[in-house]
Length: 403
Ligand SMILES: Cc1cc2nc3c(=O)[nH]c(=O)nc-3n(C[C@H](O)[C@H](O)[C@H](O)COP(=O)(O)OP(=O)(O)OC[C@H]3O[C@@H](n4cnc5c(N)ncnc54)[C@H](O)[C@@H]3O)c2cc1C
Image (cartoon, rainbow, N blue to C red):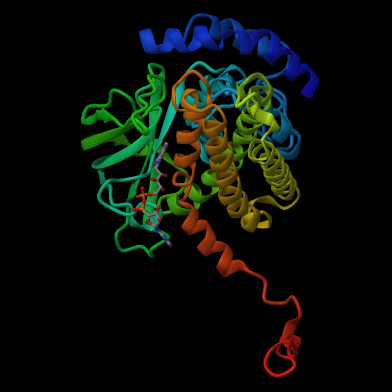
């Protein structure tokens, strides 16, 4: 499948990159060729590859997380390429949550068109007023009224909410203020166009206003939806968000690896093509080191991602808990370091949009915040650090003659 995907990517996807960006920046919509590419990817069995629980009657090729990982890395070489294969954020984690917790009707209405690549969705958790890296802080109020829920709150950085095909926002809010800190929240599906839900602005990332799928600020005022729009159990939202984020994190990491591979190749080519002080810049040890270090760090990160995917397959999210936090930190930092070196190797061109380096640089920086900031994962890892390396014998290593 890697060969098949690689061939399709090189022949059909990569050559359209410039047309993609020209069209999106001019019209704010995806170019028509996207649907042709999607149909062809689907015909070739390169569709919905990131859903290990895909049912027999659902479209796509069911793969394990480990099988998907190298394929996601190939797609991740271009930010928009995962859409061609229906493997893009935030839709895949939303498919996963609908698959796990959706009612039959919710699956019919929202999961089916998502699996067909016909609609877009958003996930609304983060709020401007509270530190949202602690999901228990989320304040948006969801109260019962007859057979309905009425929702009031403000969300921001909601990716994809302004996409022309976005049909629902999965809103996280408090249904039970008296519940324990992990039992207060629920997920409710709010269809786009519901009175009271309004996108008030988009939030460009480092000034980069992606026309498609940019994060948005959303106000919810007296938004009324039927209680049947709740996903899963009332009060189970905290656990559901954690489950959803696990997948989202791993997939983001997988895709970023592909972007790193591209940056290393571009640095390598530039190092022979560009001459300074009478020789190719690749003759200078600093450039060689930058490329070599990038490769070492990328291979380390890749193997840790593959291990995480394998653990997820073998034992589920609990078995991979430490590794998910590890890769979220390691990949975001590796990606940042490699993008930073690529900017440097390209000189002034590196800070322009004439190479993918500057977009990668900002994407990598943002990655250290979304899906949980680095510090929160480091804290988790500190807490999960095993105490049993040498057990109680550790005292032989300390104090006098404890070298
Ligand atoms: C590009 C992008 C896309 C996003 N897409 C979405 C989306 O689709 N849906 C959505 O709901 N949200 C989305 N987000 C929001 C993202 O998930 C949040 O920004 C993130 O969870 C952090 O929350 P916060 O911004 O409130 O930071 P805060 O919680 O205010 O944290 C700020 C800083 O405080 C420090 N800090 C916090 N906790 C700890 C701790 N325990 N130990 C040490 N230091 C700590 C860290 O340095 C952290 O960066 C997106 C963000 C970005 C940048």
